[in-house]
Length: 183
Image 1: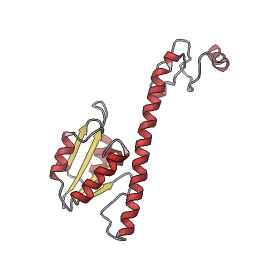
Image 2: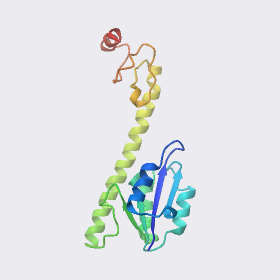
Image 3: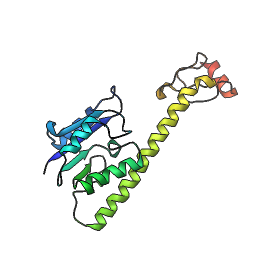
Image 4: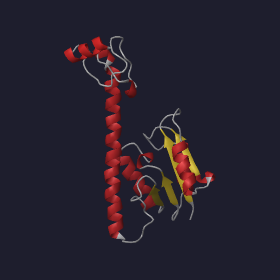
C-alpha cells in the first residue's frame, strides 16, 4: 500500500503551503505528493492525471479538504466514487476525519455515514463557491451603481466613500450621506 496526497489551488498566485504542511505532518513522502495550480473546473490537470496513473487498489489518497477533488457537487461525488469503487483506493480528508474510507469497521453502516457526509460536504462546497461568485459580482458592480464597497471584500471606494466603512449601502441614501459627512 502506498500513501499519496493531492494539493490544488485555483490560481498561480495562490499558495499550496497550508496543504503541503498538512501532508508533511501526516508523514507523506514528498515524492508521493501531487500538486496543481489550476481551476477545479475539470480534471485536465497534469498533477492529478499523474496521481491517477499511479494510484492502485489498496492505496490511500490524502487530501486536505473535499473541494480539492472538484468544483461542484456532482464532480466531487463522481470522482470520489471513481477513486474508491473503480480504482479500489481509499480516501482520507484531513479537514473532515469522518471522510476516511479506510475504516472497514461497521461495514455498511460506516459506508452509509461516509456517503451522507460526503454528499452534505459536496453540497456545502458548491454552495460556498456560488456564494463567493455572487459576492464577487456584487462587489465588482457596486461602484458603478454608486455604492460603497468594503476594502475587505476587494472592492474599490468611489471618491465620496469613507475608506473605513465596512458596510455596503447606496451612497445616495440619507444614512450614507450622514456617514460620509462625518468622515
